Structure formats: C-alpha cells, structure tokens
Length: 427
Image 1 (cartoon, rainbow, N blue to C red):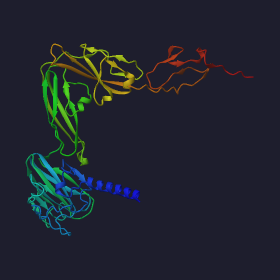
Image 2: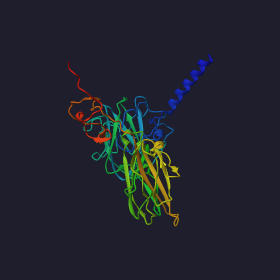
Image 3: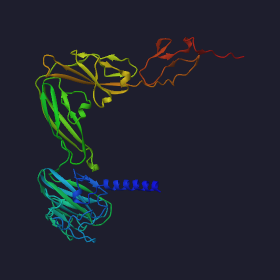
C-alpha cells in the first residue's frame, strides 16, 4: 500500500510542476513572463483560450478604466483576454491591423504610455465596435478614422497614435466571440516598434581591438555575426558576443555587427536582423605573422608534422572542430590522427620582445578531410585476350590508374599477359 501511495504522490507533484511552468498572458502582470513583448508583426492562435485570467484586471483593486469596453455575459469586462506590450523604437505615427483568422468579434484597448498594470488609467485607444462595413471583422488603428474611442455602434478602426521613442504601452485584445481561431497583428505608420538592436563599442590598443556588445532583443535571444573589416578568415571568433580581434596592418576598418533573433516566444520574430557599422582605427601593428608550412586541408591519413610560422619563437594553439577553447601545442605539433575529420582552428601568437604591449595573433582554419570511397564498378574482374581495349573509369573522378606500376588510362587485353583468360578450345 505504501508503494502505491508514493507513486501517486510523485505523479501529482509532476502534474503540479507542469501546470506551474505554464505562464499565461490573460493578465496584464504576466505579459513579460509569457514573452508577449511584441517586436513586430505576429500571429497568435492560442493566447486567449483561458477566459479573463487569474485576476480581474478591471476589478476594484486596480486603477484601470474599462473605457469603451462593455461588460461580457460573465459579468466581467474581459471575456477571453490576451494582454500584450510594445515599446517604441523610433517616434512617429503608429497604425495597427488586428485581423481574425475566422469570423470573430475582437475588441481592444491600448493603455499608456509607461503606466503599471495596476494603474493603467483610461485607454489611449479603445474599440468595441461589432463587425461591420467598411472593415468587416478587422479592427485596429488607421490614418482615416478620427475617433480615439468607439463603442458598439461605430466602425472597427480608431485614429492612429502619435508615439515617442522609448514609450511602453500595454494592449488588451478581447475575444467577444469566445472561440479559438486566433488573429494576426500587423503594424504600420512611420514609427517602429523596438526590436532587436545592434550596438557595440570598440577599444583599440596597438593592433588589438576589444569589442563590447550592448545589443538586446525585445523578446528572446540573439546570435551575433561580426565582420572586422579586414578580410580576415571566418572563424568562431566572428560569432562571439564580445570578441577580441588582432589586426595585421595600420588603418581604419569599418566593423559590422549583425544581430539575429535566434529564439522568440513569437515565431514571426525569429530571424529578424539588426546591423550597426562603426570605424576602428589601428595606428600600430607588431610584425606580420605568416604560416610557412600550413596548408588549407589535409587527408585524414596524412602524416602529422611540426607547424612553423614567422616570426619564429611564437606559440601555437589549436581549437578542435572550432568548438570550446584553444589548447596549447607547445612543440607546434599538428596531430592529424588525434584531431580527426573536421575543420580546426590554428592560432599563432607572437610577442615582440622589444614591445610586449603589442601582440601579433593570427588564425587559420585547417580542414582534415576523410578519404574518399573508391568505386571501380565500371571495370570487370576479368577479360578475354581478344576483348577490345576498355577505358578505365572510377569515382570519384581525378584519380590515377596504374597497371603493373605504370600509369594507364585503359586496359588493352591483347597487350597484357597476366590475368587474361585464354579463349576456350572448341572440339
């Protein structure tokens, strides 16, 4: 009996934990926990399936006015509610289309700017209109209509908003139809919503540039792509958040940082890019490094060797498969068997003994390639001595055939004496 009781308790704990992990945005206070800071155009199909939420956002404990919104059959302002937030990146006019995926009656109210969920006050824009011409089931903000608040007998669009960079707004979208088809948000006007940003600073000492990265995503996580402006090869360094780059020549370089939203609670935001370009000036460089015996690629069965570079007396390190940290190679050994198939980064560091503050670093990507699989299916295992010459064909192309140690392009049975089957004697 005790065993069964323990199992039951574990099951209940798992269920409770799962329910706790699910954050809904039916309440204003959960907008950010639910990942509903809107970056731009987006589609939602499962945001308003849970009624008015855990709390009544228009209850007596809050200083939130319902504006044009009417009381639902449940006796509350919210029927099936979904709350969102959006921040303004550039000032201007803002329009919005809320387009149902079905024949649904959506109402909305926009609050702000910069007010907390418990004291939103009166909506800046509010629309409670039933679906009717000329907009049908669509609702939102446009450049045509002039009203800030519209009740049940009006049209579905309010006047556009004049917004200022940095402002934060909350928006309630209420599904009076009580179904689950969902809707899309499409923003317009001259203003832009805050999205991912690309922002960095650079500090250059001698030939070393250190980059700090202050980029942010309004929702989700970012990945980074750097172009240091000097034509250097692409390595793992180009994808770090805050890399250090070593330049090989004096000059001013235009550095580009591209940020890309990698993950987001709003699928439409994934892949959104932002780019910034800034100059970096290098006024002094140490001796230029050259790899003297390091090829771009090697076969996996090649012999290991000792790497060399100029100036001499520097230090080699290798990053296997371009992942993780560099491992020092004190003797400069490039161990092909230990590294295996893949692309590996070689780093050579040289410190000028006359100027230890100025360091040379150079990276090179070296690929170890697998041996090809040979296919000689076009060549038969035996031929009659009277057979005509046969062109030798194998794959992959580009190989060399040898017969008895001699380079050949064809088999000529008449001139070969070994492994040729004589014609049978007919009696």
